[in-house]
Amino acid sequence: MLQSLAPFTQFAAHMEGVTCQPFAGGQVAMFSRRSPDKEEGKNESNEDAFALLPVSATAGVLAVADGCGGQFNGLEAAQRAINALADSVMNNSSPELIRVSILDGFEAASRRVAELGSGAATTMIAVEINGGLIRTYHVGDSQAMLLGSRGKVKLQTRSHSPVGYAVEAGMLTEDAALGHADRHIVSNVIGSPESHIDIGLPRPLSPRDTLVIGSDGLYDNLTQSEIVELLRKGPLTTAVDAARSAVARRMSGQDPTAPCKPDDFTLLVYRAGPIAARSK
Image (cartoon, rainbow, N blue to C red; front, side):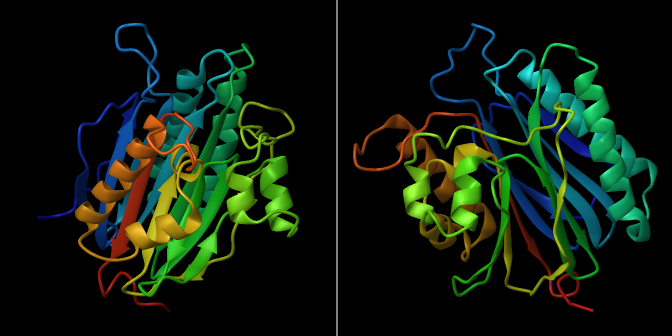
């Protein structure tokens, strides 16, 4: 199957199962679904949005935005942010210009969300895949992880929140943070004039690595070790389906001792082929 170089964006998705397609010299599996505590027919949509933005046969950008549900126009804020990023990346479709086009896209997203004039806001994370390297760009608490096939966490972006910063400073463990009462507070969002973009350094992508990008519906319901064990190995679609099922069980509250935070949930998982993953 040949890879399409057309952008793919998805808003307010309520997917029944995992889908998978070629992307940037590898495969990406995707799933997005509204929170189980949102009722159909009551205008309670999934306020997550995501995009697959191919730039060449071995380069592209994966992105997830999570509209802030406690404020007006959360879904529209996420849509505007993803569309701004997609416009910028696809209008400057050269592997050499990806970094610049992503940063321009984040800046355009800030302007477009602010133009709503309603206090709307969204998180957004974008991951550049380019020539055997990845680089992360994010605002808020949607996060990315890079997992080795043996379970090593090679990279995890930090949530822009008081709890996330406490973990980064060593004041909280990952597991303690998962159950913290203030975990829902986000201190950096697109739509605020004080927002900033967190840019990572380029990281090499090995052939058996797994790149995980998700909204907080993933990270508020599964521990880091659970995410690693579910997604680091096995057929990509099977692994993502297992993670989807695990999150659904947690959100249902079946186990009173386990984390449980019903929320919109979006997950993109990428694995490169041998050529795309070959580091420079």
